[in-house]
Length: 234
Image: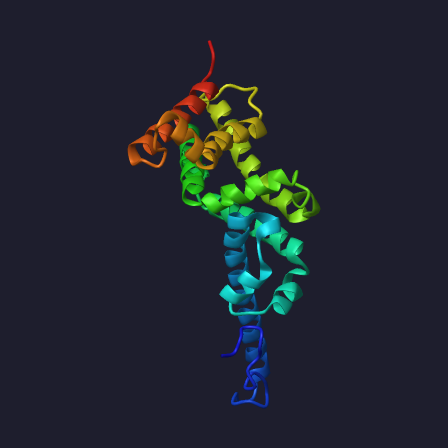
């Protein structure tokens, strides 16, 4: 079986392609390369989330993606380079979906509810993302600090919150004096905690945090709490 890092003999001007094929072959090669890279990132995300940086095995990632360790190191340089790329890919995914919410089309209170709704549901549906963030905190964000991409990626959510706050303040829906980073931390912390601590918290208090009615109650609780915080004061 041909692995994905190998190239077919027909990819080029001397294969079965007619004149002009080198451009198409080159594009096809780039597409395959990008597909292989994305496949590696998806599988590596699962491996790192399950086993941590030290416990993850590049051999296992290579086997599951039908490629080779050599090709993984070619794309990412090292195991640590792959781990950092996984972090960038994970944060990029949430920010990309976030950018498609069209919050500017909603009234500020509804936009804030929608942002909370998205953050809550995304964390619930992506426990691997939560585990990756927890793992990187164990490493004191030393890998994240090496990335210029991650800083730029996460500016967008703060800009989104700032815009909602400014629109709400201009309309009289929200009070002033709220730091957007503080608000992001407030929203993220509740959503994050429910996933990262669901087993210990659930065991201590005999409560299943994944139960649908509990999820919806918690989501509404967070939305109401944030909007109460933002409400104008007498």
